[in-house]
Image (cartoon, rainbow, N blue to C red; front, side):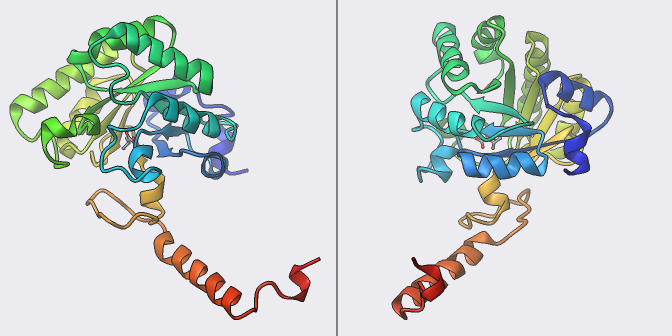
Length: 272
Ligand code: KIV
């Protein structure tokens, strides 16, 4: 077992806040299925995010908007069956919490009961404060998400860096403080300037997990399929690819096809 896994037997929201206080960085990745979640958990990850990016990565949609609550529950319950140590955060999908705190609570309760996830993530600040409070009041841990919030992509119009101007940066800072005050256990900051992200992280006692938010935050998150190089359609600056699985898997599939066509597979030892 790795040193990373040894240090904390089980990651809870409390452990994450302790990690920030001790200056220990938090590592988070996405997973949407049992097999991937098992590999990621056993490697020693602190948090698995069952992201609504499943809408893009697993289902091939252009945005995260189409994924449903039932589909998120399916993905999350597959992940939960695999994990031993990490904390599992499940995205509340678009349309399941905005504008109506009662439906936010119903959606979060369904996620917790039906998938057995450990917490939920919600995109937005002041405009969803009532929904965040209501979910928290049921004892469900909430991770906030500010900056580039992909569920609002049609409002933004593009996936470019957010909060470059003073007005948006000031709103982001006050939204982050509000989410902490409401009781969120962590906040994701997506695609914002590194200096702003550091300022936000320094102003909060809860961890700030960045994606494209620089090195001054308390932890990092990437979409697993992107960092493994399984996806290849885009290359944002913040994405470090640890493998080139698109090529390696393609090569393996080509070799298999060649072997089958050449009657090389199966050979005499690969049959009964
Ligand atoms: O859905 C997702 O994968 C996310 C991360 C990009 C933070 O929200």
